[in-house]
Image 1 (cartoon, rainbow, N blue to C red):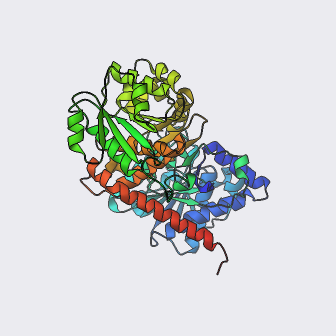
Image 2: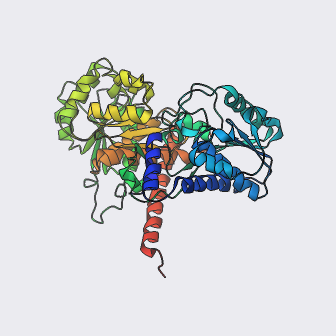
Image 3: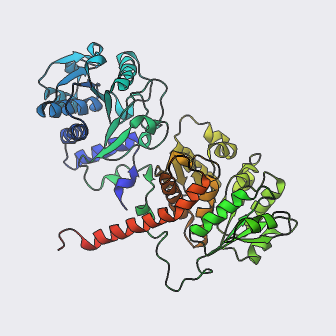
Length: 511
């Protein structure tokens, strides 16, 4: 596994630091590497300009002191402002501050109008309370200076953001660049914290291998390296039935569009055969609307278990456009009894809002639930209202409670399995925020389930591919635009894997 995909909580980051020290890497060396990385990232992006370094009382401030030294050596005009008297500093922060030979002014003396770049090294990820006093004043003033071309660079996490919760209860330094160390934190990936970070740069500060034993990640960043076998090359003797048969439950006449989108995404995503199961009145509508999807009617009074068996479904998608009705609820429960891989989306979730435990108790086999925020709150109202948990934590608890893989959708989609493993996907675009894109995602997951992939990896891969298609869309994109970009997203994934395979074949020192 690529450890760069790990996400650490703030406390786990401290454990990684302690492990590094135990292995002979001093705290001073870690801070030197962090400060130097911070200064290097700044110099790579901006020409020298008047720079104010705002240093706090702890190790985050120490990173700022070291960055000030590095920038001054490079010829930058640097002024340092400290929240506390330098004599009050302790440990590695005191040592870093001792390396600064220029003048030091108290934080209240900082006049932001004099500077074109601010280094926010006040509190970083560990602050779990609102900014106050001079820090609060400077957050507002530095943010205002951005309208005049000034930039703000934050060390680790913009001060004012809780690094674990990824949110704030007051003013925040809005960063143009955030430089963090060793591994990303929840605030770098979850909203609204991510929106305050600007560009994010991860600096390797030399924590030795083995750190995972001391600091287990809270999640992973969703990336193809985590599911290397999903969406691989088809066998040379593959045929449409060997690639999996996906069934999609259609809504009634006039409401079949969502199921058709899911079915089309299922075909593009690799299912060999896709059948839309149509209630009376919808069959002609679906059949006339698509040349590639097979439409079949079913008796609404029939046993839905037998209907899936009759169509030899390898997997099924239920919910898009199905209607919030007792009939939808009954079909979901019947489908769950077959133990087939299922994707339950939209109306298939909402119809259990009054009794979510009835759904959870019926879950068995590979099942993926795909709620957006509102649907998540209907199924897990107690978790959605928790202020002491972040999105990773509530999604993990939801997966464990339901026994299903949960795809908690949003700009920071979290995928969690019942065994507690979680992934965060940020490989996406705001252009996915349009009606119907969730139906495409449901169909993609269904296609991968039908092809035999495990539920967690199928969901993770589909979310990433769906996000990549969104990133390829320009202004004015609609759900049809996203659907048209799926083949190029799949092609780009194949190209990325081929490139990585070539690099592994070459290997270090080859040739």
